Image (cartoon, rainbow, N blue to C red):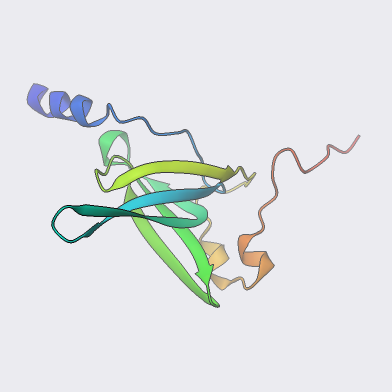
Length: 121
């Protein structure tokens, strides 16, 4: 068991930002082109789920492209991810946002931000 924990510590040294479900993120993925070239391809969307713990953490990002919903699951500590940028923080009351699969247009991408919503007195 100690070997497994040592391997997890080595892989978990990668710096990742703190983000939650409901946040809009831009994930820059490494795509190999040829033998020695690597291109960075952005995938921007809403985080609809986080699953796992430690080095086994996965997160699902959903975006709508040309009217079609696209979901992609990323391992958090994957070497294929260059970096993760937080575009906007959202405030949600659920751990999984699978209900966004049935939404269309602005309803599918607009999630209230913490600083946008004023508190009612």
